[in-house]
Length: 229
Ligand SMILES: CC(C)(COP(=O)(O)OP(=O)(O)OC[C@H]1O[C@@H](n2cnc3c(N)ncnc32)[C@H](O)[C@@H]1OP(=O)(O)O)[C@@H](O)C(=O)NCCC(=O)NCCS
Image (cartoon, rainbow, N blue to C red; front, side, top):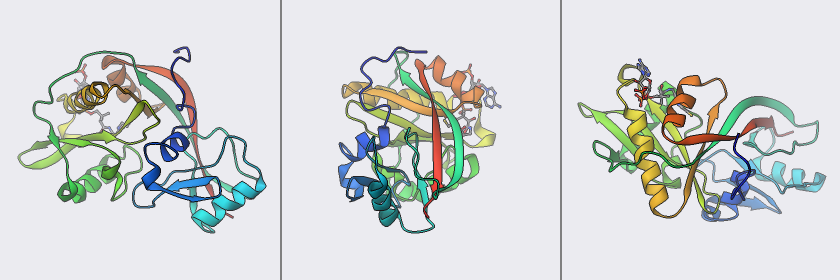
């Protein structure tokens, strides 16, 4: 496991993104914040929230809605019903192969229906109709059809999260995911930032792929979701 170095913001990547580079995607009530719904479903509160701040978040999201708190270490009051608890690893890029992006295309607004369809078939994590606007998304096409994609999501200052890494089942094992992640890593490093990502602890194939590309596990994290009372 990596020692904590230069990792300001990574313990609370949603909050540091929404209060920093992604402030233009933020909705807030008091210190509670959330992404605009079609962009991402993540929400956050301050590191030491009191009851009033959870009330603010409830007002922001609406009764009965999902509060996806991502990896936030604090939990809401017991009246917030747990919806999911997911074991993830947070990995950070420590250097490795980069490349020029040959065979990789940048995805635009017209590609969104195909991106949504690919994400629905491969389930790399939540992907919303405007998620593409969070950063650069790249893909691989075979015979015109989008068969693999990856993109940039959270933006804690100095960092960019690689996300939505997925390949259609019948196009796997051809190096598409490796090529796409390398292309993003190259872009991110070129602007002086460091790539990081989150992966399910049980996703051995993806973890092995990321390790080959120069990512190392920084810390296990727990993703939690709750129903707003
Ligand atoms: C994880 C995933 C993105 C990998 O995509 P991919 O395009 O097959 O990845 P690559 O081909 O670049 O690398 C996969 C590795 O497995 C090997 N492999 C061989 N046959 C394979 C097969 N049938 N399926 C998958 N991988 C295979 C590849 O050779 C490669 O190993 P190598 O780098 O030593 O050659 C893909 O399996 C996927 O979409 N999974 C579901 C969504 C997901 O879990 N995303 C990750 C979220 S963090």
